Length: 150
Image 1 (cartoon, one colour):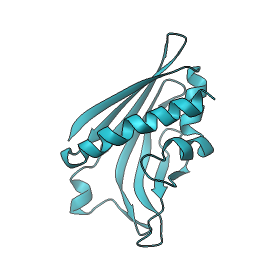
Image 2 (image 1 turned 90 degrees about the vertical axis):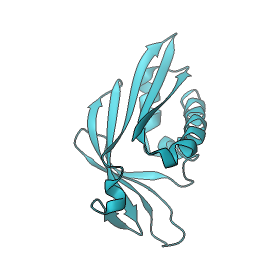
Image 3 (image 1 turned 60 degrees about the horizontal axis):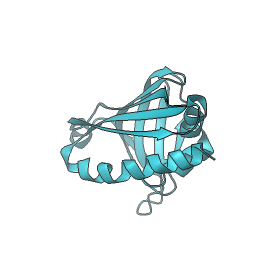
Image 4 (image 1 turned 120 degrees about the horizontal axis):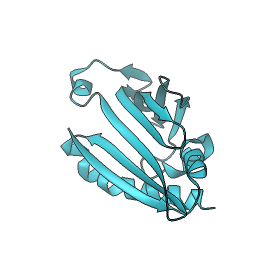
């Protein structure tokens, strides 16, 4: 497992960037580069279970990730601990495949900078997915920027 980093400057206060990133409707917008139709179930409070889901045409049931909010310092930092997969509507936290990469963390830091907000993202990733995420994350952050600056 290795860490990859991304950041973007957004011309909006960190409160607006935070709310845009985590709000249900706007989350669905900025995560489109990862998977069309992405959404979450749960809440962002520290310790809460979260399901990050999207349509799975093969099984006709949504699939994605099961996670927990490890840390939440409102408007400053949020850490998501990924614990397993959801496949065909079934949660998997114990298979050998899942154990290869869990736990994995996705951390967001919000910093006031130059009259706006810099959002920094640090993600634990397996080598096999690195190129894919290096392509998708900048696209998703550009959409987040567009939505937050509206």
